[in-house]
Amino acid sequence: MAKILVVEDNHDYQELLKTFLENAFHEVTTAWNGPDALALADIGLYDLILLDLMLPGIDGFDVCRAIRKKYDTPVIMLTALDSEACQMRGYGLRIDDYITKPVSMTLLLQKIEAVLRRTMPSMSQARPLHFEGILLDPLTHTVHVSGQPVDLTLREFEILQELMQAPGSVMTRKSLIEKLWGYDFSISDTRIVDTHMKNIRRKLGAADCIETVRGVGYRLKRSSDQ
Image (tube, rainbow, N blue to C red):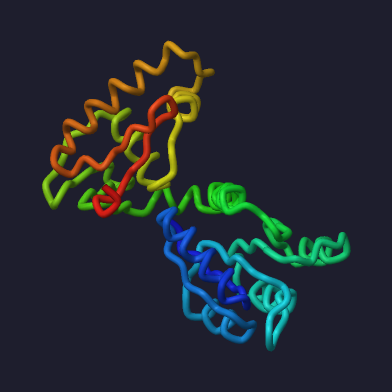
């Protein structure tokens, strides 16, 4: 889960972005003009800022320029301005991506998560992860469910950590094999992942919130979505 600031002056589109990102288990704060965006950037520690360019008060370029004087927060510009000059100007302000509208919400989410993977790895590996009563602490290498310790093997711990770093997102068997085992995926390897996942779910007991996405992989699902 990431803390994302959405700066968008179209209220309907702002609400669409907020809803979609929250459904992907991100924490979203919104601003509809430049001054509000700068005020929020100063008081909130955000993992990413999704920034429109045509804003009331202060345009997105000036917002980005002001942010860059203080913070290295990742910025994705999301705008209807598609000229090369605007894109070059944005990248000159050290933005992380420039996306032109219209864009599908699914593709936008993929681009956001790609930036987060590049910019959050050290933080995501160090900070405790919480989900539905499960607490995973990478520093102490421990897992607790409702305050009670759960004994996981190293590989089980790593798999659960991958799921908890991106709750709601599907982790494919292929991606788990290649990242955690370090070799190319083959169809026979699915048994390895499935066996480990079965053991994790058994050990989590009543707190098991892992959902099997048939033919693809696994993801964490909130009890409210059951």
